[in-house]
Amino acid sequence: MFDSMIIGQITLDHNIDYDGREEFINGGAVTFSGYAAAAIGHSVAVVPKGNTRVIDPFRVFADSKVEKVFAVESDTYTEMQNTYFTADRERRRSLNTKRIEPYKPSDLPDAEARIYHLGGLVAGDFPHEFVEACAARGDVGLDVQGMMRYRNDDETLELRDWPEKREILPLIRYLKTDAAEAEKLTGTDDREKAAFLLCEWGAKEVVITHNTEVIACDGKQIFRAPLRPRNLTGRTGRGDTTFAGYLCERLHADISTALTFAAALVSLKMETPGPFKGTREDVYNYIKTYYC
Image (cartoon, rainbow, N blue to C red; front, side, top):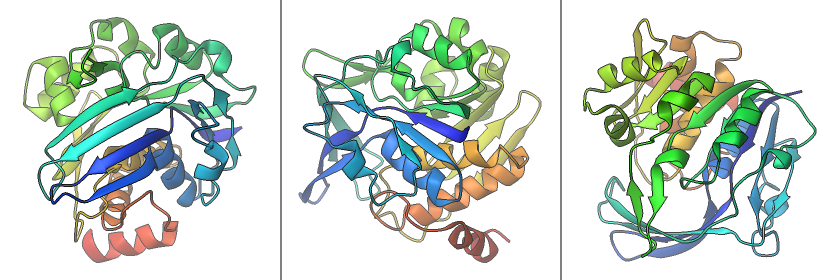
C-alpha cells in the first residue's frame, strides 16, 4: 500500500529561455511530483508511460526516493518544446511535438495506493474509463491540465473547456487547476468563486495555484497560503510540486496545515532548477523562517 501512486508520462523537454539559452531535460508532472512527494517522506510509486528506449524511467528516478517505478511501454513518447518570453516564466509558448498512447485501465499495476494522482499533460492522456478505474480503487487526485490542454494540428497547445467535467468531477477527491484553467472551466476570473463552483459540481477539494499564492476549498470555506520564493530559477514544475505536497500531507494533516506545507515546499523548490531533492526538515525550516 503506497501513500501515493503518481501516474503520467515523463517528457523530453526542449526549453528555450527568454534570453535564448536552451536546455534538454526530462520533465512532466510525474517527474516533479514523484521526486517531491518521496523527498518529504511519503511512500510513492510512479507509473510512467512511454517508449523506454528513448526515455528510461528507471534512470530518470534513479536519484529520487521513489519506492517503485511501474513502467508502462508505449510505441511513442511525449516531447515538449517550451519557449519562455519573460524572466519569471509566466508567459510561454508550448509545442507538443510527440505524445504517448493513452492510458488504459489495464496499465494500472497490481498494487494499491491511498491516493491515485493523475498528472497528465494533454487531453486524451487519461480517457474517462481510466479515471473511473482509478476511482474504483481509491481517492483520485486530478491535475485538470491533462483534460484541458488540446494538441492542435500545428503542434500548438490550446486550453479549452472540459465538456465532461460535470460527469467526471464527482469521481474526484482532489482537483488541481491553475488560475487560467479555473477561469476557463467556470467562466469567472474570481479564483474563490471558481473553487466553490468546482466543489459544487462534484470535486471534494479544489486546489488553485497562482504565481502569488495557492488556495484550497472544501466547498465550505477558502484556505490560502502565499508563495515566498527568494528567486524563480526553478519555476518549472511549480504546480506539480505543489499538488504532490498537498495530496500527501492531506493524508495526515488538515487543509490549512497541508496547504502551508505545500506552499513552503514549492517556494523552496522554485529556488533551484529541477525537481525537489531536499528533505522534510528543509521545508520545516523554511516554514519557520518565512511563514511564522
